[in-house]
Length: 82
Length: 373
Image 1: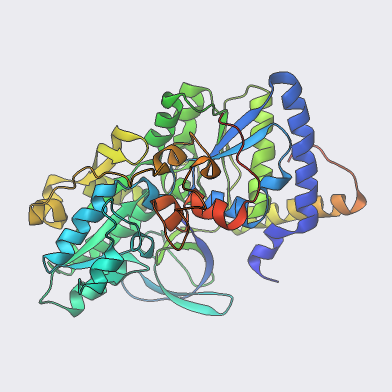
Image 2: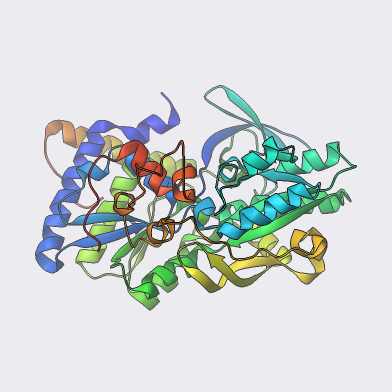
């Protein structure tokens, strides 16, 4: 339906143009759908457009939860609600 | 370590699979089997790619829904696009549409081979660049897709408008996700207990948009990312909600999806489009399930500009993509699957598209289809 790739904004140019990067790949990206884009922001890119900014706090909380789950699995015990 | 690695940790997946089995045991005792529809074709691909179907607990069935933009596009659309190309217009298309066969076996790829000016684009901006680079030829962007792709297409038409570039228009076949979800529920031939909701459509429309599905139809909706841990965690949440009879909306992709969605994208949709009835392969004509360009934007509407009308097309003989799209059958239940219909010789769009469930099942799934719901 709509693949979206997380990328990091490197440069914000004129008129909604920007350069983004992911795993060493640089791409011209249109950021006109994003409020106040800034270099260093992580965004989701679909069809050459940044469609949303990634919330770093939510991403870290999510990753921390999965890290905890991995730890628990290593200790071999199930756990409560996600 | 790559960003996505954290969302693919095998040990965490094992813990989530165990939790899913525990939750499903409770659900089975309370209400029996559970059928969840993953609306989005990219979820179907991710489930296949990461081998998740084989790890599902007994009684939990994943059904692929009408969320592949190429698959749901009416067969007549490709025919009209070919006619426009053969009239000398430039056609800019996303790659997936290139190989989709018409009932007569033609395709945009074959049209290009005959000399039609058909160009594949990764972004709608590529169509803008093609039109700017070739002022002597008018270009038509094949504008299919759901809300995620609608916003970039409209932002591109806005750029053409602002630049006074008249040589670009769009053959619009936009789709709205909520009416399709309501249609598969109304169809009733497939039992659906809950929805795994598409992450990037939700980025545009917002998680709150699914409240109508939860409140009006009593089905829980969980927005999930495409990573395996996201999908597993969302399934744990969904099975819990179904088991407890709680028709709620849960946003398990909060790192991207906001409650109210993307206001800029929504503003563009309001300024450029108005809802209209749309034809869906497998679901027929659904009221308010599509968008057309507003009257004041008619010059960007290829149908009005070139006096063409997308006629209802016929599916290839024996093709059951319609039933697969509507969740009425799994791909292996189609008599053509893996026999006449393969990625090398696709009969229908579900085998062509990179988000088609037949393509996913062909590539990743070995298990036989479950009995119909």
